[in-house]
Amino acid sequence: MPKHDFGAFLRCCDKEPQNVIILRQPEEDGRSIFRLPTKNRIIQFIGNGGLEQLSFVNTEEWRNNFDKSYPLYVDAYEFRTLSILGYIALIRNERLGTWIVKSFHRSKNDPSLVIGGLLGNRQN
Amino acid sequence: MSNLVCPVCGSPNLTQHSFFETISESLGGHVQLEKKNYICAECGSEGDLFSENEEAAEFAIAKLREDLVVSILEDFTKNNVSLAAIERALELPQRTLTKWKTKSSNPSAAGVSLLKFLKIFPWLLEVAENGFEYGLSQKLYLENALKTFMQKMAFEESGFRSAGVITTANTTVLYFQTQKNGATPIFADERVHIEARGV
Ligand SMILES: [Zn+2]
View 1 (cartoon, rainbow over the protein chains, first blue to last red):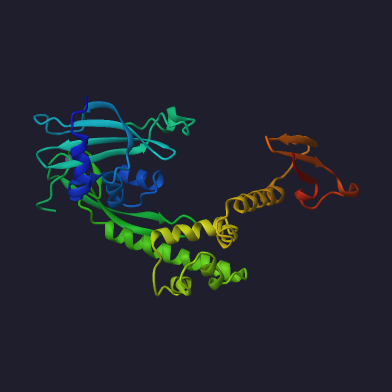
View 2 (view 1 turned 180 degrees about the vertical axis):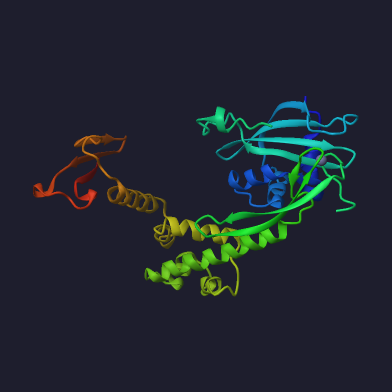
């Protein structure tokens, strides 16, 4: 079961995009893989229902969190957009009201990744 | 930075750094854009955490697209395809492309994509000129595909059979390889002939 309400994330992308944070690596992957050259365009794409055939992958506690008294969780999903099988990982910080996109790239299960074990398995 | 906190973990321990990033436009050029990112010393998160680069990035993209549009339209005119003729075929108001070329108006993203398609597949203009009629469009597509095949394919003696037949439900294609008068061919496409026959 995902830890967070994905529908709330989509609504945030659509209505409160300032509360959606795209980290550097997913920003670069958005540009190079999905042809979404800015953070705003990534957020608009997601808010417009761009993540199709969404499928929950897993939830993990976020290891890098420095405040151990307030654990944060990462929900990961696969999705489809045209020919690409994608992967997105999200953190929700309720206290700050933010959604953080920490991964946004091809899934390691995307058939086009013939050497997926080496290049596509960047689910961190 | 005094009142900024990491939007991921809430730590105030942020440092800002600058770097250059290459912004590219497909079929177009690229520019180096100076960006400012934050790194959180506590959780390691890095990014444009407060959206300070977006405006400059959008501006750079728009500039690259403007330049690309001019370059594509200049290519057409250099190849004796007039902007008026393109506008006619695409049923655009006359002088639309001239305004794009002189940057007195900007095409939409859809307009830029249309020009990119025409740059890659200029025969699409002929498709448009013929009212997107399906059968003729297919014929133009196949003609151009075969022409490209003949011009670009480097046939190797060892890897390409000297003759063959490709058959579908309606058509048979017979190909055979010849050497002209025993002379070494200058272009690869002199050595291969393709005949198509409807069944
Ligand atoms: Zn942090």
